Length: 31
Length: 596
Picture (cartoon, rainbow over the protein chains, first blue to last red):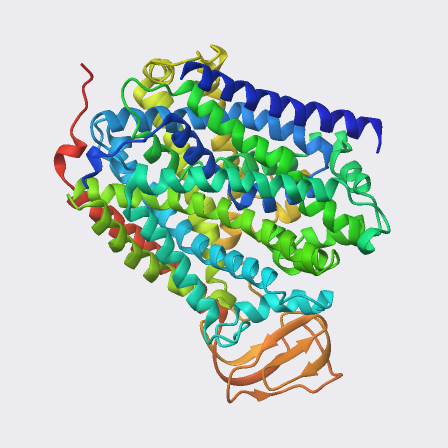
């Protein structure tokens, strides 16, 4: 797998996952 | 159960239902295909930009206006839009939201029934031992209402009727006891099935179970950026379109769900969580199933060819054959997981799409949720029947184009204008952030006022006058040739060949080539098959060379254009009836709203 493809895939997938988890964390914290 | 008494049972239930509404077939079938067709890794850049500038603002608009309308006991697009401004135009604009939601729900229920049937066929091993061609033609056989694929007569129709009844049954139990419970059950299962398939796709190795390539070949192809494509307007329009469809925008579904929020409830955090859950499902799970698995078996070139027919073709004509390569047990589990995942994604979406009309009737005609749900079932059945019976006559595509694409964009454009320019962005900004657990970044106020409405108008105009083959370099002040799929091109029947009249005595060839086969049901010219009506007299013979416009057979012929025009007339009449329902609705639901 090329480095550019790997970097883009990881950046995008990790950012979206972290953001989703963070938002759920905020919700459960507020509960 | 009166509508006004209804509310969400829990915040998690609300978010899962909202995310379930957004997570649909687009996440698993449309997104990967769009990514492949639009530059792989580079597609993600316009996609994310569109998500930030178009998707999130529209999510905020639908959530905040829905909650605002709900405060005055208004739970459907016509009454919610009317609550933003006293001009009567907005209630009729809202009927467009009802229109698109019913039309989409009609054909979505039909697709849902294919999915359910395929999940069962996977479990019972129907596809075991079938060749690639046999699996592909199984789909056409399944859609032929007169042929049974399970031994049960009219199984396609029965499965469709069952799916419709299931939706109505859940809807009749209301928001908290029906929709919310289903979302809490379906969404976690969907994620589990999705993660299992992603694991299987990522761990594919060349040589195992007949695979030709490692999964890295597909991931490399899918994520390698082709930065030249960033300068192509087609890629930007595709990305914006994908964001729009994936978030269930423009059909009043999100708005209706949000109208059951309480005054003290937050909009900002909940809406962002639901939107990002959808993105997680799309980017992390949706991108890692059908493309890696199909490329693993077929290679890049063939999969690119297959994606030209869209995600539905790849999902139904190809995936069962590929799962079959994994052995009897694993193929049953994978097939059930894949179609189970699609089914859960589809049913949570169809329920949300159905709710605007159910809410409209019970809200404005004082019907109970149960009575409204069953009445909606009858309306839906009547609207879906042409789609089911005349599927091969193009009725399904007409529903998708006018109800599921054009009306959607147009309604969203009106929503954005109503929010930012008619009601005023300052009031709108206050609605978004009121009682919020987070505050949205201030630059969104600018985006909401200028960028989002402008983007929607550009997309709409672009869809209206799309140049041939999506080649935007053709644009010129002297005019340009329109694409068949542009709105104007569709209206002018540009994609219909020489058989342009409703009724005719002769049917003409629509392609050039040699007549390959003549059976009692069809004439095959090269790869194009023309079905033969009963009592038709064939005018050509096998191995004869024909060209566009050559008469193939004669008899009493009803051309496809008749069904298409009848369908369009039906859709216009239906929109008129909805406007009439809005006109007759309880007047106090349209009175001017004043906040205390």
